[in-house]
Image 1 (spheres, rainbow, N blue to C red):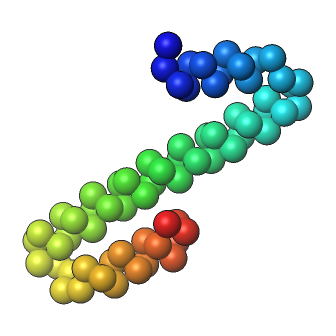
Image 2: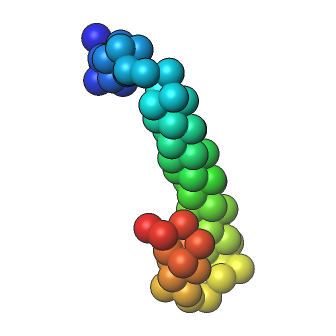
Image 3: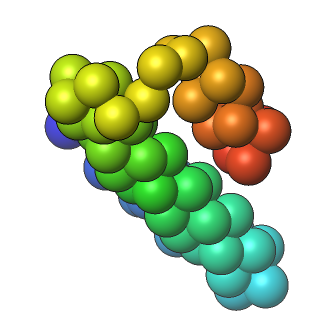
Length: 68
């Protein structure tokens, strides 16, 4: 059993209101992670293509937008 499966199993024992809050928080985190991953991929492709001269500014922008 994965940690996620174990967490879901244990979360099922919590009151419904708390389960909904945990679900909302988890979905928000997942969407934020996926968006950041996509942005990093785009940034790396731009760096490889020479479209961006300063990788530090790209990282600084990502950090500012995603709080990383």
